[in-house]
Length: 154
Figure 1: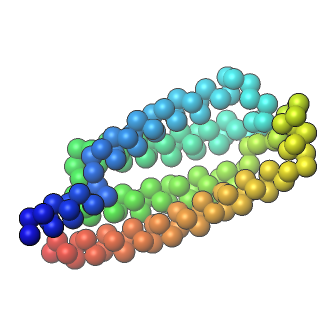
Figure 2 (figure 1 turned 180 degrees about the vertical axis):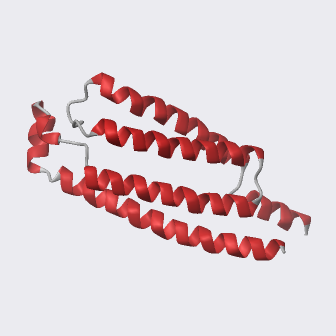
């Protein structure tokens, strides 16, 4: 009986190691994405700084949530945090979809030539659309899991 309980606890999504790994990734990604404008990446447009502010806010919210969940990790809090983070992810994907701060026509060399024939802009827009759909679905599922976990604890 106790091994079954241990297995259930092991399979729970609210593991400290997951939150720590996510926090480390958030910090690394935050550093890299903020260094991009200084690297003079040719495919970033003038609209990228506006999107960068939104990216920074989204990463900040995600990092704060992970930090909070490292310290305090009841399952209902995990699920409601996932609802919020899904909303943040949806907003970021929507912003990247609508603003689209990328222009791959400026790339030279063989990569630029290959991208002229490959509909990379369309592929990225489809991926951002999938990201919006995935975050919407994840938010709904997390909301249901939150309701179930709250009812289970009462």
